[in-house]
Image 1 (tube, rainbow, N blue to C red):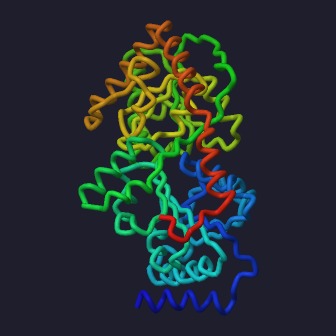
Image 2: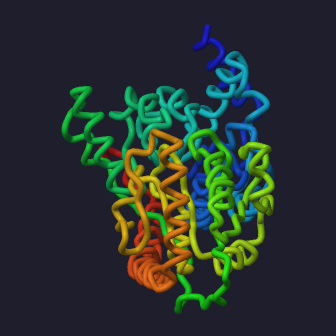
Image 3: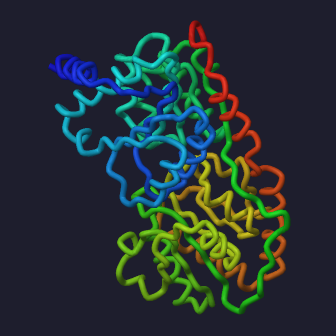
Length: 385
């Protein structure tokens, strides 16, 4: 039945084919605000000279990056059909027909299972690439049966590469498949000098990001309340659509800005902050940590994903291991805020070290070079695995 629906989708395309079929296709889940989505926007920008086509597979929680995507590509939203298995199978057939009609198709995807459903229906010489932002979200398991079909896999940090290596070894995957995996670290705009800060009596504590389950933003609200109860003078600012993610009882101790779509507004928030909190139970290497360090904000984070590759506990920030006990985690984060309030010279030293590390490592030159090379001259797909 599924194959019949896929063939129906292909037939629909043949009845009304596209007038312009590009060589580069992207499949991404969303264009709402998020670190992964901002990376996707930058990747699309590198492919812009080739007029790519971008398929958005899920319903976004906002349109924040829609215009940014559309500036560099044609956008096709599929969410109205992909939620139903019958119509999703028809969509797969239609997409396969579009891509297979291209002269030399390159298909690039990240964070969407629909891509792996599509792979068996693509022509053999289609060059396919996927990007994994973090390990533990499930996409690594969904994609495993298709690892041999992927020409390249990209991960954003070395910790994820190690996780993928262990997964392959545990499933007795051929050793040569790991050779197709490359690490391409993201980059952010790093000011030429560390932004100056006006010293204030009250510490300025920041959270930036989504309110999804793995972020555990409710802990930020609890940390803010505990600091208040302990008499620690600190103001907590939460950037994003986050009011639902923090317990109502903790709202009085937090300032919610909502989503900030203007990059300068976001930069201004970083410049007006002392500490970044990240309470996640899983991550890759978050953009917010890079941005905070680039602005001299001291990150205090759980030791998850690839964060420890750049963050050194007590040297350019704080890393909290064994983060399963949430009550203990709240106490430890509050203790860090209290310590930095009491020891302002330490805060300044860590701020300087965070900025210096960002200036040396987060410029994004490797990111730009990799993707410009990937899209400027399409790979010789025949035999390139």
